[in-house]
Structures are given as structure tokens and as C-alpha cells.
Image 1 (cartoon, rainbow, N blue to C red):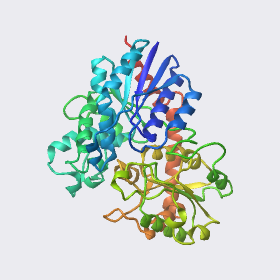
Image 2: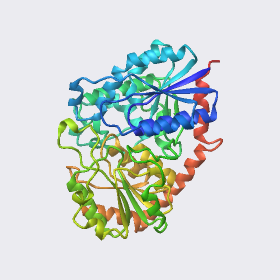
Image 3: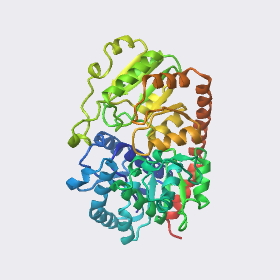
Image 4: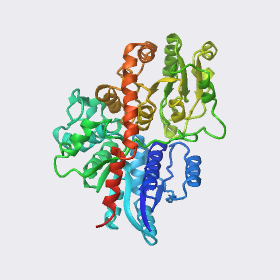
Length: 477
């Protein structure tokens, strides 16, 4: 028996794309068994249990192995970045990973360990056990290029990105404002920066990097990486673009909701004209202040467009609760007085969650205001829905630059230096996307990219060819 072990970091977005990779391997190479390690974190990443149960019942060839729960030292919570918690948790998990891999090896031949970017610590375990270790990069090739190049940038300056008022010139990318680099690496003194720099150093030392994208989406960045221009102190490992890997059905995804029956928002969309509805949704960790929510509401009301808006409660002001799940939102107190009544003929506000893939693929959706999480970007591309990019955390500001300047698939939501977006800006960007000729140009571009994604995933497409090469690298001889 040959097996492949997948090791995602906690969090619905990372878990779903890793499961989709497992499904893809099994679809084309059913002789493998797939084991996916599950880590239970001591902080909010959304509820994964219903999703895991559904996958287990549908695909018996995928086994979920729950690693023993461990607690984090209190000082881990001092960093403002939740990514620090993930790195620390997964570093402390190494003994459990070692034990699990030894146990699996007793019954089968482990051909590869595929780790999430946060699981860099596991490379040493794989080396001890002589198991080839591959990274699964859950963002795009442009983002990968920036991280492969990070050690070189680190050597060229002693300042933090947040203090560099310049554009960075990274091979294969448009100029990137230093302040738009991934949020956890903006402060050189933060523990998160140290973790990400360490990951960047280790990326080229892996057996290969699997990227959740397809060649036609980021051709310039992919060619630049393959030409060896991003890793300056050694060879570039093999790169395998096997995407877009997205969940076809996300009824229980997105950090809650789900359950039986058809969600109310899908029923509501049935009564709306084709391509007439703007969808606003900001990921399982995307939270706005009450002031910002009211500003969005004013912009939507003034604008007159039909909309479907997913609203979550604002982040807690209590520092000890900032990594916990927010309570259900009270829409009447969070939104302007009378807003829900005045817009009920053309708008629907849903609490906390919506089945994003199903919504984006509905014929009545004409645009998407997104936080620029990579899964959401791929879902919009595969649905052929143009975007307004409103980044909130992680590498999302970086993704906005790429989406707007390189791919030309989105308009940017402009914000103040403090990150606040006015009602006027919301109104303007929505009109631009839904009414103006510029929005139609975006729509045509993204429809062409949708077709390119389908071609990449079809028999003989670039992503299928990459998967074949990947699997071939696991088999000796």
C-alpha cells in the first residue's frame, strides 16, 4: 500500500484546499491512500467538524488523523498576528507528527508528506524519517515569488516594510508598495516575521512546491520562478501548478452555517434578474467595526444596486477574546436605523455565513466585493465574477495589487491611512463594477479566465500534466 500524508494548518480555507488536493490525487491515482492530519487549535478557525464528517462519508479513501490536542504557552498570544499562533502550535506538534508518521509507515509506504506553509517545522521530521517533503502553497504564484525573494530583501535593508515608503521590485511582479506586503511580515521585530522568513528560507529546500493556481492565471510569475530568478542562493525546487482547487459544494464551509435544506439567500437569488446582484463577503475571519458596517450600508443604499451582504459582529474590544469566534450579529443595532426596511425590495443581509461557491455560481450574481483571500479569488475566477478588492488581513493587500495591476480582474477599494473606507468610495466602486463600461471590460476578462481554468483542469490540461509529474516524482525508478 502506498500512501500520501497531507498536513494542513488549522483554518477552513487551508483545510478545504488541502482536502481538494487529496481528492484530485485520488481521482487520477486511486491506488494511493490519503491521510490528512487534523490539528485542533486553542483559538477560533471556524467549525470544521461538519465538513470533515461530510468528506469522510463521501470519500472513504481519505482518512482524517486527529493529532493530540496541545496547549499554547500564554506568551504566544502576545503577537497581534494570529499567524504566529499557527506557526507556534504546529512547531510544538512535531513529536505528534513524528509518532503518527511512524505509525502509518508500519502499514504502508509513505511516498510523500505534503505540508502547509505554516508547517515548516515538520520538514525536519520528514528528513529524519527519509520521507520526501513538499510544500502546498495555498496562495498564488505571485505571492510565492515574493516569499522566495524575501530572504534577499531581508539582507538588503534593516528597516521594517511598514517603515519603508517605497515600491519593492520583485522579479516577475508589478511594483509592490512595501506597506502592501503580507500583513504578518510588515514589522521586522514581530515573531511572525521571523517565522515567515524561516519558511522562505526552507521553501527551496523542499522536494517541490505545489501551488493552488493554473499557468494561464499567473504566467509571468510562474516563468520567473522557474527561470530561477526568485531564489538567489541556490537551486529552485520543482513547481507544480495543480489548481484551481476549490470545493464544489460548501454548504457547511465558511466557519459555520450550513445544515439541511437550501439556504435562504439562494432562494432569494432565484427571484433576481441575471447578473444584477452584488455579493459582499469577507472570509471567515473578516470583521468590521460598527462604524465601518454603517458606512458600507450607506454606500449600498445610495448606490441603488441589488445586493447580498454577509455581515458578522465587529471584533471584540476585549484583547483576551480577539482570537475567539464573534457572537451572532444584531443587525438592527449594527446597521443604520431603517436600513433593512428601506432596502428590502433589492437587498438581503445574511448573518455570519453564506454558501459562497453556490452564490458566486448563481446566474443573478454580477459582482463580488471580496477580502482577496486566495480561495475566494479562485472561486470568483471559476465562476466568472469580476471583483472589487477590499483586503483585510494576511497577504490580502498583496493580492489586491496582483488582482488589479497584474491580472486586471478587480477594481481596488481605496481606503484611508487608518484603513477606513467611506460610503462614497463604496458607492463609486459598486457603480464602476456593476454599471460602467470598465466593469464590463473586467467581466469579459474574467469570463476568458474562467474558460482557461476549465481548460487547465481538463484532460491533457496544464494542471493535470503537473499532477502527473508530481506523482511520478514520488515513485522510485
